[in-house]
Image (cartoon, rainbow, N blue to C red; front, side, top):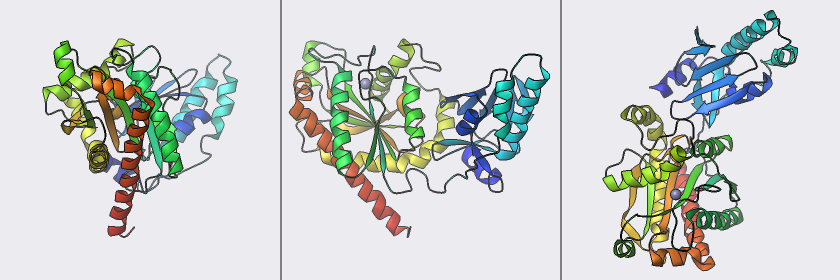
Length: 364
Ligand SMILES: [Zn+2]
């Protein structure tokens, strides 16, 4: 619904990148991926927009927009005509007040400057070039803990090796973290969008909280896409991965998505679903010959918060069970880490080829 709204309303208007606009008017910028809303806060005013909704709110007062804000290519767009109207208003209000806000006023006078139209091709339909790797957890959030290791360290090592492998293949590679730091779940997808990625890979280790006997039994890799969970097991894994957000007081944090949130996500998920599955297929092929075995059928879906905001095909990889002694031992060795990075890199390369051939059949 939202996507259609944009196509119609943006056909004839010039759009400005909302984040770039906020810089020009000296506002701070906040994006809330679950609600698909964004807020620009200047010294005096709070202006709130929502993707697909033809109204803005200025300090709580509603204002009609010429076009609904749109989300495209990892950028948020608002109609230039709306930007000029709103930020001229903001400016007028500021100068009318007695407070000395000259600095903001003068910097907000060039609102109309660089104008960019959304590109036609988005992640998933264009050639695969930029890969965003997200090593899960970090800093105060250790992730799952094994007997001898922490999830955050294993996934960082694998991600760093993977980056090198992919760069050697000619990809542009971005890491959401390259050291032991804490990054909020929502921020990870934001970064991926800023970098205009073609593929988002969030890397994790699985774990179960169970008896030693059971921990010895449950092992294996598993790949997850963002979709409504079909099993309690998948739901539980998403809850475990999402828990960090609620633990560390992240804004809008929750362990599960509500039915309404799933509904809102649907249009966007549809757009990237096919590609997320294509990549998952390649992962299954390349991990098949590895040391760690496949857990169940190897693929599942659930509401992983870290994937929610990504405007690109996205997959969450559970390399193996850190709670299983064999998986943990393998994932801790540099040989194991190198091999897992190789499987991942191979899957990315095959995915790139698959997208390329798909484009050729479409005559692009
Ligand atoms: Zn994790």
